[in-house]
Image (cartoon, rainbow over all chains, first blue to last red; front, side, top):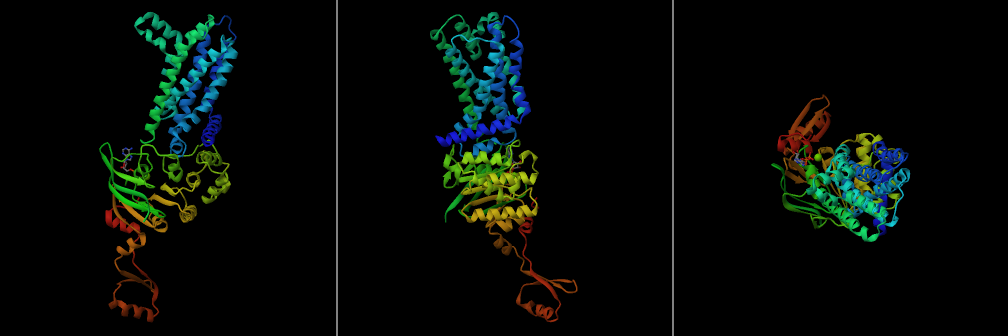
Amino acid sequence: MTLALRRMYAIFQKDMKDVSKNMYISTTALTPIILAFFYGRMDNIQLDMYYLIINFTFSIVAVFVQAAIIAEEKEKNTLRGLMLSPASAGEILIGKSLLTLAFTGITLALSIFLVGYEIPNAPVIIAALFLSGLFYTALGTLLGLVTKTVMEASVALLPVMFVFGLTPLIDAIINQYPALSFLEYMPNMQLIELAAQMEAGGGFAEAWQPLLIITAWFAAALAAAWIVYTKRMTDS
Amino acid sequence: MEYSIEVNNVSKVFSNYEALKNLDFKVATGEIFGFLGPSGAGKTTTIKMLTNQLRPTDGEALVLGRSMARNWKDDFQQRMGVLTDNSALYERLSVYENLKLYCDLYDLSYSRIEEALEMVNLEDTGKKAVGKLSKGMTQRAMLARAFLHAPELLFLDEPTSALDPTNAAHIYKSLRELNKKGTTIFLTTHNMHEAETLCDRVAFLDHGKIQLLDAPQKLRRRFADNTMTIELTTGKKITLDNVPENAKKMYAYMADEQVASVHTNEPTLGDIFVKLTGRELV
Ligand SMILES: Nc1ncnc2c1ncn2[C@@H]1O[C@H](COP(=O)(O)OP(=O)(O)O)[C@@H](O)[C@H]1O
Ligand SMILES: [Mg+2]
């Protein structure tokens, strides 16, 4: 176990040094904070607006940073060195997620503070944000593994932002086409649904189902990333 | 005899192209084994297959006594080292930071970093970012990474292709030391001099097939045409068959103090390769 920790921490430290010298990734990751700062100065902010910023943070930090640092390992031929080392797939994938998770947590906390969102029922909302962070990081991992370069990962981010970022748009679509109401099960929809319930004074009785659905999304994204990763080990 | 690598009738087909055809050879534990061939011969493909980066289309290979299982275990990867064209270092990090990461991954003491840097003649370059190194320095830094954990079995794909003769010689010395301490080395090269000075045995690979396999000296003897060339003090060169009937001629040149130099005509590995395949080793 201690050896596993040594390996994961080493990968985290390496990523931290690497990203701190990578202007493209580090400046992109700061945009949600700037956005939150400006929105925070408006009056009368609706819940939707808070979650627009929260989802934007997930897309830009969790998905993009994660996808970019993994795609870069492929682009620069460094991932193979990790794979051929004694570190296990689990150690590598967790180690490579630590920086993104830390980055996402910090950016999210700052954005929420700047935009002035007062969290009702903090344990539930924080749990939901944490699970969402795990899901988006796993999604970023998947995206990084299926693309070959940082540029490709940046392009692939656009549809992700569109699908997971523009929650109000999905709401409008569902209203227009009831046949598409299954879209309500999307993790971003579940998150905002949960937030609305808590805003209205709901408790755990209302919370467990959305939490479970978000967890299922995380499990699915993780499984997909795992499968792609193990396939990548013998195909260069 | 104990073998570190046993390749049994391995073939590799890429879509329609047959890159390796029925490879069949063994590498003894403790050997420095050279895979010699022009580019496109299938050298890198062979290393990738032996290190589980590619699956063979047909046949089986045992590495360190183990078949190419789907997933290799921890201790297995601890026991071997690989340097191929797809194993790069992190460009924004210093050489030292890169090696430190690998010390952590292989569970080594950081004191290994200095030792590995010394082995590749990069003692003073540890603090430099890898992206700022010359090609030759980068290759040496990558070699340092492969040397870090002094594996039982080391795969090196053209390890000195970007090095000047002085640094190549330094690497040869380090490889011999590693080998003496117990590392079996499988290296590919298209440099016949490297194969001759370093390898216990070499295999000639051309168009995905092993054409010849033996110790360099034996190959040279086998392909020698049994003649000798005498250079006279006048500058004239005379080639004689190395047979008793020519002893008198030789005696005469020597008695007259006419001999400037004498040598038997053994072909280089490069000559043998050309003779065998009609192709140069480039
Ligand atoms: N992934 C691949 N897909 C298709 N052809 C490949 C692939 N990898 C190698 N080849 C082909 O296989 C042959 C051997 O390549 P390689 O092993 O790299 O040769 P070498 O290392 O001896 O220069 C070449 O003709 C190369 O084009
Ligand atoms: Mg090659």
